[in-house]
Length: 125
Image 1 (tube, rainbow, N blue to C red):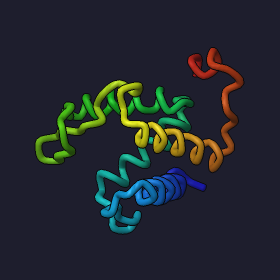
Image 2 (image 1 turned 90 degrees about the horizontal axis):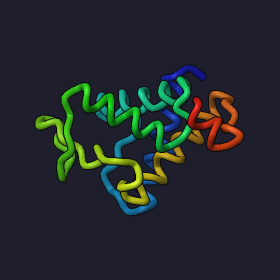
Image 3 (image 1 turned 180 degrees about the vertical axis):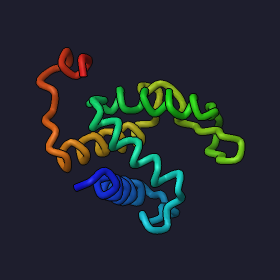
């Protein structure tokens, strides 16, 4: 599978999860915004590039969003470039932490990346 194919699978797993916890407006990959598709591709590349835990992947995402001019806000607003998840991983709602963990697991599985043996190895990655 190439990066875009894995990103599509990640998106659809996240979509299924989000719908299972009550979100109603979660578009399929084909109907997702360019930003949503690019975010999934970014996440796949982050895991493939060595960000092996949900925490490290989230931290990398926060750095990238900040670099692109985004800041924390109470709601997602693409025009104002605000996002409620631009916070430390530990402060994220449990549902978002679960989505991040699912994403990392799907990418690892799809790309054949083994799980780090222990926390030390994960931090070194």
